[in-house]
Amino acid sequence: MKRLDLEQTTENWKKWRSEGLGGSDIHTVIAGTDLERRSLMKRSMHPGGDRHIPEHIQVAMARGLALEPFARKLAEQALACNLPPVCIESDVDSRFRASLDGLDASGKIVLEVKCLARDTHMRIYKRYQQTGSGEASIPANYYSQIQYQLMVSEAQVAYYAGYNPEADVTFYLIPIYPNYTYHAALRDTAIGYFNTLDKNRGMPDIIGITGYARSGKDTIAEWLSTRYGYNRFSIADLPKRMVSEADGMPYPLPESEKEQWRQVLIDTSARLKEEKGQDYWIQQLIPSLEVPAVISDVRYVNEAVVLSEFARKRGLTFSLWAAIRVTEPPNETEALSIPPTVERADVIIENTGSLEDLNRILEQKVILYGV
Image (tube, rainbow, N blue to C red; front, side, top):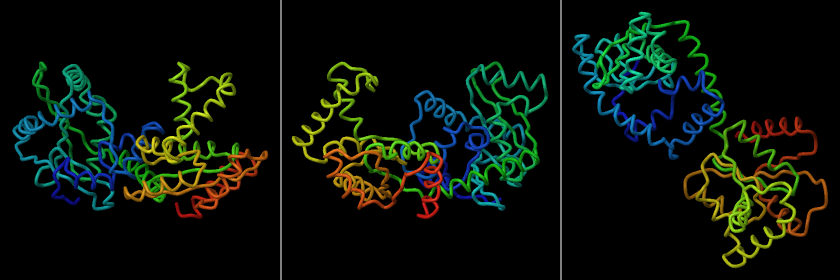
């Protein structure tokens, strides 16, 4: 175990956390939903992005930080040792890391402070009084976190310190001992996560997809979203939403209404581009982009240029992918706009077979281009 001179919550600490796996994330890796794991992976690949934290969770986190020093002092008195907070890395693999609420000088005792709501605080206490088992008493996500801390630190025991000054029992300690079988499962699952993360790090921050109608652009965008956690965006959704709101129509438009509104959408899009410039719609989309992002309908060269420049100025990477599948003659607009956009593409995807063929081609392209 290596102790680090890092102050928790600082920018340097956030960067360090993003380069490995911390205790608060391990339960997501081993038991989270696909969406939760993709969200965690997204934060690891793009640590500079803003992470939305609901207000009630922010309040709870602030309360916990304020109460933590009092809980630590009580724990130090009960255990007769100093337990300063510290950041650590595993000697086995430095990507295994933890921000501990407390660790004694010998490295044998870990402290994990939880300042939960009164009812939850007391429910855990009563369960421990009944069972005498730490594993059976604390929530599964906390148990995973503490076992991970024990694995990284190689300590002999961790104490779950519950503290709520408003509860009937304001403070208690629950000992948690190393479960080495559980550690092996944690380690294997975490290494699998790292392998996937390493593969995904090469993916562009922003991908634009061009191609004729019905060439598979939306299918490719969905594959990127499902396989790599990309957020999906569409330039064409902007005029659709504008027209729907202006005319009091539901959004998205019902299938039965789409054809009759088609010309209105085309005219609205063209009019605003003529009045406000050819970059109008792509500039309207950019503020809403959240990386990793895929835009499924980059039809014009200027849109690709704007996206590329936007990425460059922010230190992000951009790649233009072209889906090639001609099922019917293109309309006049596509015949003029799509070919020069395809010529700029970094990745060409010939979608001439089945959906299974397309999935296989996409996997091959990811490997071939090193993304």
